[in-house]
Image 1: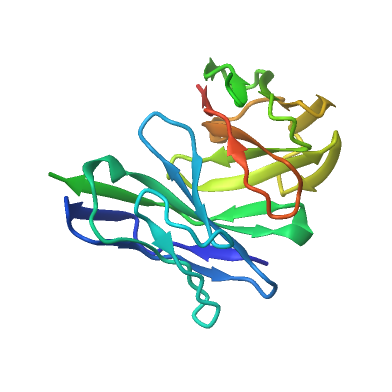
Image 2: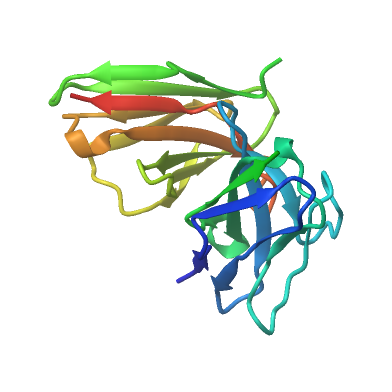
Length: 110
Length: 113
């Protein structure tokens, strides 16, 4: 069975500081990893996915299969980055089921 | 223009009642999902349908019954509501099943009194 762990429930950083959200997964097959974000009073939306290898809103995430991690990073946090972030593992063989981590709330202070 | 919509947005009801939540997507996607987000913000898949066919059915009480009249709609009917059913329910859709990006609805906050 697949599992996603986000060890930090809350990350509080000052504006302009770097921020890193940790995500570790457990899955024996070839994983599809995603980061979803939920801003206050908004719907859950895709931030980025590992196969795209792109930077969205200054965020990047690298899939490390050796460490089974997909940490999300941004070098300079902005106040508008304050939100709930979810790491998710997609399994093609299971009908594209997404298994979510518990989420990390990011609070960027001015 | 809303891609994935849900109604109602809020639902407050008494224990034992039966209620439905509706979901519609206008993205032309083949696959739709229901997720439950509990009070600790933990998100978990409940069901998935592809072209009106049930694909994923996680360990969910059989009081929950999804219905897909066509591939643009996936409704969730809940019988004999219990206090523990209080949560936010999210509908989502994706083009296919192969690791495609899922697009989420705004959520329905269900409160069972």
